Picture (tube, rainbow, N blue to C red):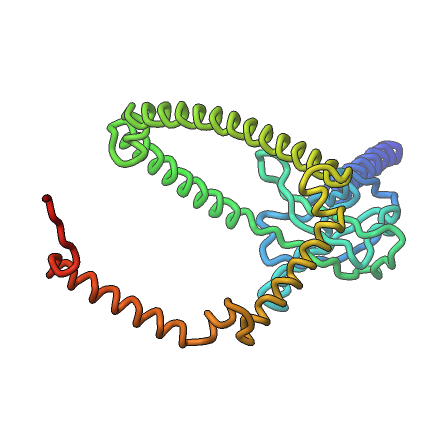
Length: 311
């Protein structure tokens, strides 16, 4: 009888041990995530306005690796942006990456929509936060807001496609400027003619440019030849530039002319009297008047002055 009781008690101990092991494994699977339950961990806190289905035990990822899990979620209501307090446990080995400039945000796994906390590490070597310190949230917008924005974008895209379809329909029907451009060949013909004229004009301009260049070259050569002749004291221009005799002759002529003009001004000589004395002018005027009277009298009375006799 005592032996039977001992056997039953031993089975009960084994059952209790198995139940404890299963419970430990379940707790580890829920709270430990992809990390070891025997590894040292540290805790940080973050706040979200809406966790969108994040639950206890959700993984914490950093740079694509699972480094911890969500320990607890509680309402905080500190302000409109910090309504839910999320406490996360991560490996102590990654704690040096959680510095003052580290950030967290919510992510979604695959098409099922399972949530996780994405930890963006700070600058390595910076001052790490204290135990249960707050890591600021990088707000990239909630999923409903993103879906709503996507829906609005699709609606706008549909409107654009509809407007584009209407525009293409009007173009095919030849309505408006674009329609005429798409259906009328007149513009094409005019453009073709314009291109031909422009081609011909370009050719003429090219020829004119060549002729102008040739003319400029000839003029430059002529100027060069003229310069050489001037430098060589050949020709009239060369002598004008280099021979002082012409200058001396011009200076002497100018002096003589100045002397003559001076004499005329002081009424010396015949030219001076003609220019300055009015007596000769008066005599000549009287002489011309008498000559005119004589000629008029001869015309009126020719017999008085001219007598003809045949026999």
